[in-house]
Amino acid sequence: MGEKKKKIVKTIKVDLDKCNGCRACEVVCSAFHAAPKYSSNNPARSRIRVIHEPLKDVYVPVYAGEYAKAECMGRDKYVINGKEYDECSFCRASCPSRDLFKEPDSALPLKCDMCEDDPPQEKPLCVQWCLNDALVYEEREEEVEEEVKQEDVEIGLDSMIDKYGLEKVRDTVTRMSLAKKG
Ligand code: SF4
Ligand code: SF4
Image 1: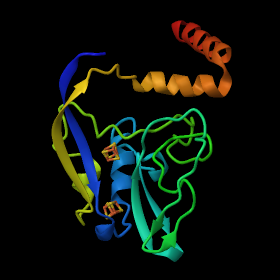
Image 2 (image 1 turned 180 degrees about the vertical axis):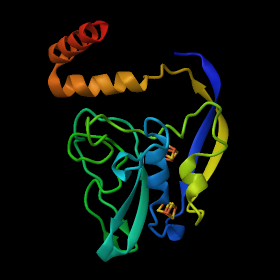
Image 3 (image 1 turned 120 degrees about the horizontal axis):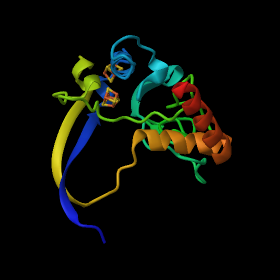
């Protein structure tokens, strides 16, 4: 058992009734995470995606969650206001069965980081930019067991190893470091 410690749990409450599908949240998220910051925007790189089913008339903002190495064994199906939605529509995982929540050029997994910044943002940017108040930021304190946080770079490498194999990734990194040393 690990040690208990206090942790601030950050959540964003999504009110579907207020979302009009303007996609400002996608635009600002992708701009904030561009390198350098705000140098470009491309919703395909956003860590929030507004799932839109035109015939069913609903907009559902979905946040990128954990990277999943494999498709899950079961699938989710949602019925909202009596209308049934496709399997996996509102899942948060970056997983091999679809393109959602993958960096379009590298295919590396994307995950919402609550706009980690230095100095910290007062509120996540998607919340600040949602003029309809469909996204509401909340914080609460909880006692949790200390966890070992996996760095973004480790998650990215893990997904590359799954895709290309450890040997290929190791050889490529070695070759690139030698080339950089010049
Ligand atoms: S910015 Fe707000 S209203 Fe616009 S799509 Fe995103 S959640 Fe919906
Ligand atoms: S909290 Fe920040 S990182 Fe997460 S989806 Fe919103 S803008 Fe993107």
